[in-house]
Each structure stands twice: as C-alpha cells, then as structure tokens.
Length: 158
Image (cartoon, rainbow, N blue to C red; front, top):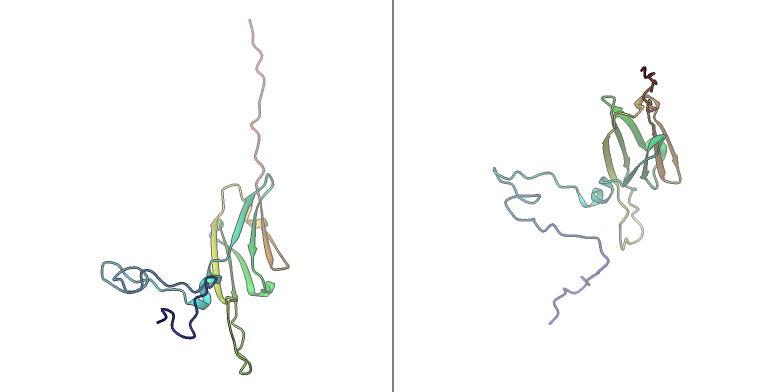
C-alpha cells in the first residue's frame, strides 16, 4: 500500500504550497462576519506580486533597485504620488499557450506588481531618474543638501 497516489510523486523542491488556513472561518480561506476573507492572489500571480526591491541611502541619493527580469521599460511605471510617495508598478503578461507539446512544469510568474515607498523629507522628488538594464530597474532620488549651521565667533570683552 502506498501513501502517495499513483502519478503524484512527492517533489521536495516544488513551490506549490498549500494554505494552512484554508477551510478555517478566518484568514484567506473562508469568510466570517468577525474575520472577513481577503482576496487571495492566484498561484500564477503570487510569486510576481511582491517584486523584490532594495533601498539604499548614499550621501547623495536614495537608490532603489528592483529585479524585473523579462520586462521592457514600457511595461514598468515609476511615479510619485502626493509629492513624497514613490510608486513602482508593472505587469508581466502570461505567454500564450501553444497547443502543441506537453507542459511538464510552469514556474515563471506573471501578473501585476505594485510597491510604494514613502520618501524621507530630504528627497528631491522633482529630480527622480530611472534607468533599466538587463532586467534591473534603478531609481535614483537625489537628496537635498544639508545646510550646515552658520557659526559666528563672538568677541569676548573684558
């Protein structure tokens, strides 16, 4: 007797995860008046929905780097909302299925992503620059110069 159904071998490297709260009256699976259900990302968009972005502050600027492999610059948007919120968004469209051949695994993700970052007070939001090369989006937000306090010597009499 086998615990694994025929044709369904266990794959320890699979990213196909189950929802541990599926079936409960709260969380992502069910609905309740006390614990409302939130829309769950479909498996085809879940991996891409949370695009990974690094934020580094240098003496001159805030630098954001986002991995967006396979996207063209026309498929990515960089915007500033309310003067101090940097918004990076985009969409990777699902490839059209070919009727020939047999798919054994589909792991590349598709779907939309959206990330927002509240910029600090020292950011020059009107001078933001963005560049994309080899699937890496780099957004540079220059910083305002820190004004050093003016020091004036006072003569001591006496």
